[in-house]
Amino acid sequence: MNKFSFRKITQFIFFAIVLIVTYAKNAVELGLPTIPWIDGLSLHAICPFGAVETFYTLITGQGMINKIHESTIVMFVLVTAGAVLFGSAFCGFICPLGTIQEWIGKLGKKLFPKKYNKIIPQKLDVKLKYLRYVVLAAILYFSSTTLKLVFADYDPYYALFNFYAGEVTITAIAVLAVVLLSSLIIERPWCRYLCPYGVILGWFNKIRIFKLSRNSTTCIDCKKCDRVCPMNLKISDKKSVTSTSCISCMECTSERACPVEDTLVMKMGGVK
Ligand code: SF4
Ligand code: SF4
Picture (cartoon, helix red, strand yellow):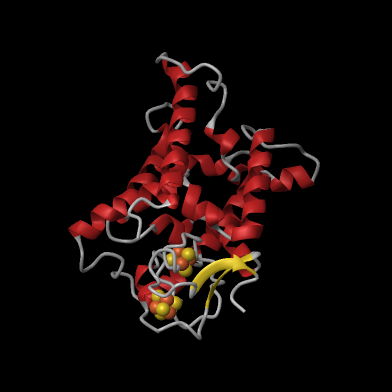
């Protein structure tokens, strides 16, 4: 089992890219040393969720809402194409807010080994996951009625990379602080209960071309896959993982946790 998996390297690279892009933009405004070529980019220009926020204004012919760029739409199309193939792999491999929650979670596992990811009862966990739909509905409603990027004022992702610049609201910083602190005891709390983009990408887990599936003939029912799943999903009794909460992290697969070769795999069409 590789300690530094392809996924961890990918997460690190994308985190670094976003960090550099946001610094380049803020450096111009703060009078810090700048990075030529990329200092005109902003986080909004590379975040695919902006396309969801401006969806209504686009389809009603009102153009894009303030701060959304053409590149946002390109990113959205690329991430959607990835989701058709692999489901919510953007969450497990790319999203820097997911990555930082994972990094803090590693510390949490050391600090609270017995309680980590076990404090929310399963029944409550199931109910709390519906909050993602509430957040998504609120964003769509307020973005389309105000024609503004309203979520930026509450967005922990935006606050994470811009907290040192003047544009970030105290509310967004407070949301970020709550997310990061709760990551010490709950695995990926933002992704699990609140992320409006994760819920959209999660729908693709139901139709993804490369299905995450379990071969029940070779499975030895050790339940290791269940134990490693960061989203606390029960995999060992499923033929195929279709939950909208799966982040396509691949940690459960035969490449990582499952001890039996070719038993839990992500492959085209799934296990026959
Ligand atoms: S089911 Fe597997 S791929 Fe999905 S979140 Fe759990 S461990 Fe990751
Ligand atoms: S880890 Fe592999 S062998 Fe064990 S229960 Fe899960 S799918 Fe079956």
